[in-house]
Image (cartoon, rainbow, N blue to C red; front, side, top):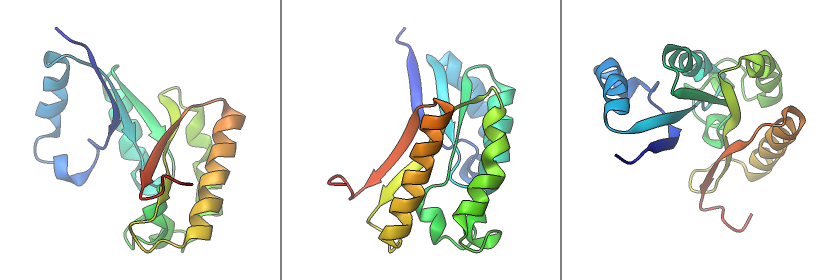
Length: 147
């Protein structure tokens, strides 16, 4: 059997609410030996960590996705009113959790009308955090290859 490591998953997303338990149980049976479950803002970080604590093959990546800068239901907007710096500071203690193995999902997205300078600043801050914590990153790149 081939061994599969899913390097980018969102199983904590609402789309999986109906069958998440069955799906997660089936993954190892299908050859999945590891999953990197990615948060997209502080609002879903707790669910990501919950999954990572529930199964030894699930690992967490915590970060702020560029689209979270404009998504009304993302904590970046709904809780922090666009102040991603305050959100990132509030998320800082989460990186002490042993289940967190990467900073992510972070990056650039030029498909949606996300202000570019804010994206660059957010991405750079999270890259610096990853460097400081000596963690790899899970990068989102949509129509931003040149950068």
